[in-house]
Length: 336
Image (spheres, rainbow, N blue to C red):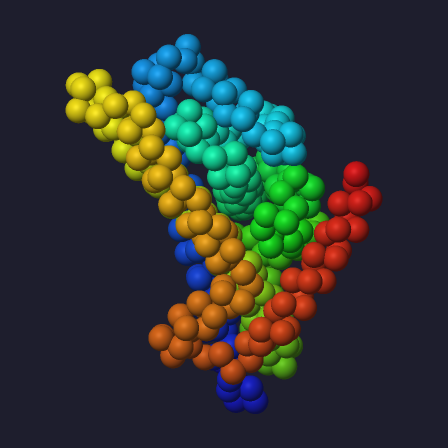
């Protein structure tokens, strides 16, 4: 790249590598969202079948049964979230319906009120994660208005409805779109617009400064998109586990129908399975943090001997995310 700043070649390669990582992570988010949707569509089939076998006219009636057994506080949270997603992406509504259906199956299987409340809140967090993932994908696809709406609802949900259920902050829903080396990337930001990083290949010192700044911004963005990937992976596992749980419920119901076991025994087994699942949801939710994302990426870079001489450290990245979180809070307050 030049004789005065020979490391510009390493810098340029690092910027391209970081941009490629983010682009790849976005594709993984897209695949996880699609796979989650496929699981959810299959789960809906099980839920409709199980609802009728248990004497409910429809899945909505089964879900209403679950609602009636929630505490007033949990019922209010659930209904507020339900109202918020009605005008959103069908994928988000589908995720909420599946989670609500599993809650319904738990309710009629004798799940304790405490366990039902935990299941309700954690499935709502998973719906919030799905909103963030889809919001990011919409922005990258150029559907800015839809993406912004999804992210705005998610930000509101985590700050109000789900406060205390997850460590997700405003920064997790604050993206802007950046073009780097022809790649369209979602990066940390508040104002949503399309910014292009122009790398000047004429003046070496200017090129060095531009590449350094690009590296810093992309390193911060990569942590955020890694976290979004972790959110989408958590929701995929939730959808897969929900489908498996409903498959198990269907099998048990078949045993009841042919007289092998009693309905009471089937309900007991199903309640036990859901009870075992609830703590795993907590682990999945709490496992997604800035530190875990950063550590994962550091291990990834080490495994491929990346040139990381000028990568910002964790404290720098965390401070940038915190600054965006503070700016996002101000922006949200002004728009409210």
